[in-house]
Image (cartoon, rainbow, N blue to C red; front, top):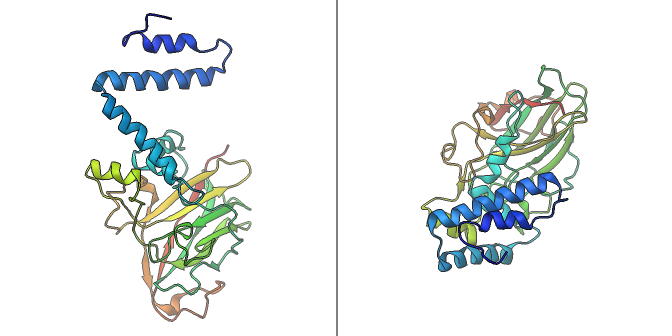
Length: 288
């Protein structure tokens, strides 16, 4: 079309799309361009501002590596990751939450009752619970992928002082659906703010802090996979999570217990000499 105007360019774009393209692709691309064009018209976007947007994308690409996913981080701090999670969470199962940019695939096996704390300092945390279905039945053989930051607030993929799978474990539960492991108490931390995403946060007057949490990916045949996080109820950033990951049902409470109450059957049984923290959190999966 020769006579493209600011008012008809969106319709012209749609007219250029192939008739035989997949319907879902047509729906997504049509809506995407509609919103982008409406955004430009609503804000009267200038060439300079358009250029800043392009520079932001180029900046994300420049710092993107196998261990740093700046585009994912941008999606997180803009709330898109959490919005997609919430659009597809089951109302009867545990809420999903953001995957984040620091998950490492291929974590080593971790036995039920195993330890991830190893020689790191900080208080011992005993985390346990049952993986069950929406009717309350335990899910035998469910797989739990666990990861978190070290006490210095860094994930293994961010820290040359940690090995690749530090604070990562892959657990398969038994017939009772019970998981249990020991680790160090997670700490609140900042998302990387030395790149383009940090520029966005500063421009909006926002901080980069996340509340402390444990990450879980839970899978079982016949059930929807769950990507989620759990957060302690006393964290100072619980109501100000910069990636919008907190949900009411993902908030748990640590209970401090004396060393003589540490249970048997754990990798650290008989080795805990100081008070420890305990949390019980059940995970509910929805059927596929």
